[in-house]
Amino acid sequence: VAATVGVVTGIACTALAAGALKERSASATITQTEEFDSATASCKRGSTAVSGGFEGTGYGQGVTPQLLPIDSARAGKRQWTSAGAFFLSAGTTSGEFTSYVYCDDSKPRLKTKSATTTLADSGTPDAIGSATAKCKRGSVAVSGGFDSSDFLNNFSGPAIFPLTSRREGKRKWTVSAFNDGGVKRFGSGWVWL
Image 1 (cartoon, rainbow, N blue to C red):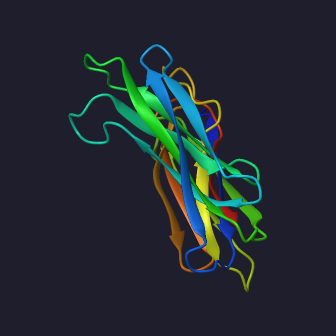
Image 2 (tube, rainbow, N blue to C red):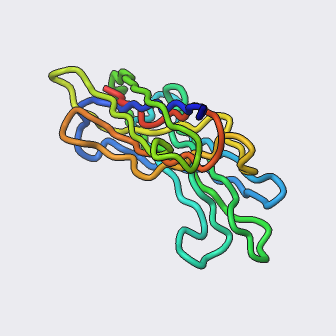
C-alpha cells in the first residue's frame, strides 16, 4: 500500500496601483552538511508583502551545486520565505539561496485561498500531481507560492520538488510537484486576494 503525500496550493489576489511594488531580498548560504535552509525577505513597516520568489545558484544541467526550491510562500503580512535543498555537490560544499519579496505601501487587503492534493510515494504514477487555488469572483490572483514542509533531503521521507507555480487565467494559481521520496504533505501555491 503506497503512502500518500498532500499538496496545498494558494494565491494572493488584489488590485495594485502602477509602480507600487518595491523589491527586497534576503539570502542564506546552504551547505552540503546542512542540506537545506531558508531565507526570509521582509517589507519595511507600513507596507505589505504582495508577492515573492526565489533564486538559487546552479539551476542548470551539469552545474553544481544545485539548490532546488522546496518552499516559497508569503509568511505573515510583511514577509516572504523561500527555502532550498542542497543537491548534487560534485566538489562544492555550499551555495547561495535568495528569497525576494515585493512590497506595496498602499496596504492592499490580501486574502488567502488554498487547495490541497495528494502525492504518492516516488516510483508510482501518482508521485506527480497539482493543486489549484481559486480567488472569488470579482478578485484577481496577484501571486502564489508553495510549501513542502518536513522535506527530507536524504529521501528517507518526503522529497517534494515543485515543477510549476503559476497563475492560470485571472483567478487561479496552480502548482505541480514531484515526490521523489516517501510520505509527506506538500503545500503548494497560495492565492492572495
